[in-house]
Length: 74
Image: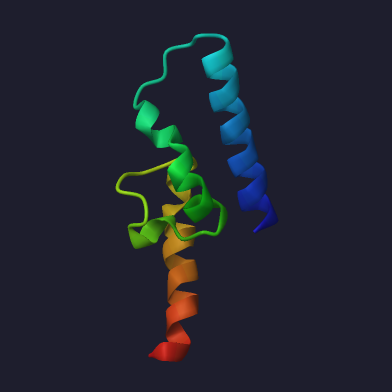
């Protein structure tokens, strides 16, 4: 989890710097702030955000976390 938060922080810093420096970002919807809580809690693979967001490659860790949370119910 700490590595995920560090990576997420780096991505947020990169997005902020890109906006400040007026650098064009392909797919700016990746940085929608409404998706940040789901990303921070590793729940972005649940569909809480309608598209890939922030650290896109962490979706697999998010899916794994969801299975950890659902296993007791199964």
